[in-house]
Image (cartoon, rainbow, N blue to C red; front, side, top):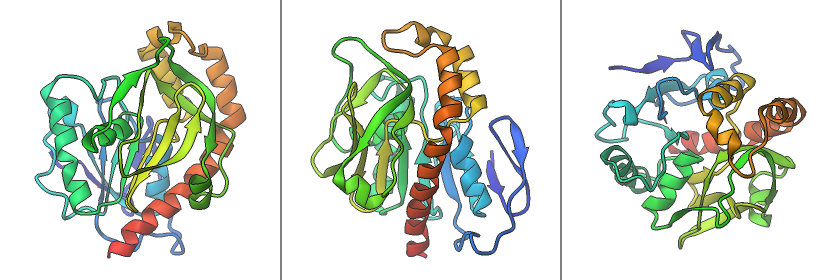
Length: 264
């Protein structure tokens, strides 16, 4: 199935509604290579990340590898790769997860710009030899939580918000060769880089109000876990903190897509 979408010619349906591409020559993508987005549920959305890329004129191709869709045999024709989150674990002993983790070697070998979000970050950590584990006191991180950038994180993106939206019950360590970009209190490692092209974040900069509503309904059992914020607070805090998180996303994505343009 061809899931390729050209954002210059058609509105891309993101997060349950169609948005029209912007026609701003100053920010239009300067590469024809599509960006591959991996989502792990049929009803998942690239949210604010997808919208940002669309507005910049990037062509997007969406695949659902844990829903039976085949991964590309190679990544030579792609400009970048973004792997989003999902309810599964990078530790799961199932062929789809193992296959996707092993497949990520291609991104490393080709120095392809990579962004892993939550599960996508943890999959890359596994590929790099690291480990994924639950909180030692059984806590989860759901809601807007404090994140502090390291000096290297601030050098990359000068302005970090006080809080990012979180939705996870596992965290990752930092294997050899990775660089810490941000830390948290409950789960220490919140963002990392590997070389110049690989980035991972434990938090969810892609969330929108619709995504939060969908998660609170479809995964409402998570809100009963130790450390989770209740749905009312999730909604209120999103209105309070979303603009700062969106500003960080704008700065980060400008940096990340500059790596794509440097390869052309």
